[in-house]
Image (cartoon, rainbow, N blue to C red; front, side, top):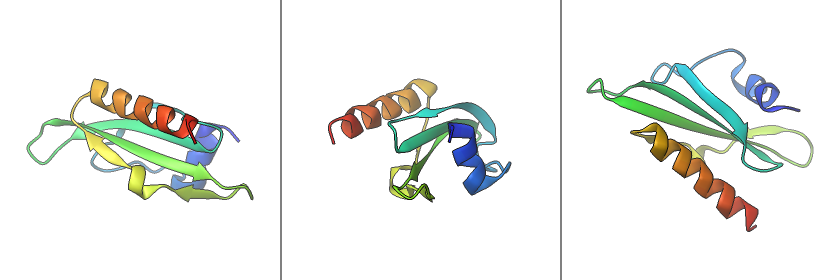
Length: 91
């Protein structure tokens, strides 16, 4: 199952109303995928939403809500993903 298929299982073609513009999707490791999307915060500042989904050993997709976050620059968002990749590689 590729990254787009995993996201489709949970969100269909829906988008987050706060961060509707998809920037990128990718894999963290063999079990987790991410999405970075862009929008505007309450004060109209740019925000970057990060959504993490996982796939268990039965192939069931689940939301990894504790890993989801918002960053205030694309470089911060990419740094967060890089940190998750590093942490999950060590597991």
